[in-house]
Length: 88
Image (tube, rainbow, N blue to C red):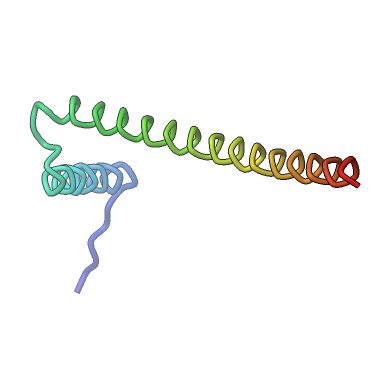
């Protein structure tokens, strides 16, 4: 039995066709195979960017609130300390 011999160009062409066929199947499976796919992807990118912005804002807000809480606690402790010293 004789083996099949392919040139590098033939092998590359075959792999290219298979890759394109697989990509089309994957896009169809995801529902991104029609004319609305570009808009859908843009919308998904926009949602992802909004999520990242929200996450960043939440982190910043949390750090600011935690810092403020610590400073308020320190201020209250110093005030109570002075208040007790003056009251004696």
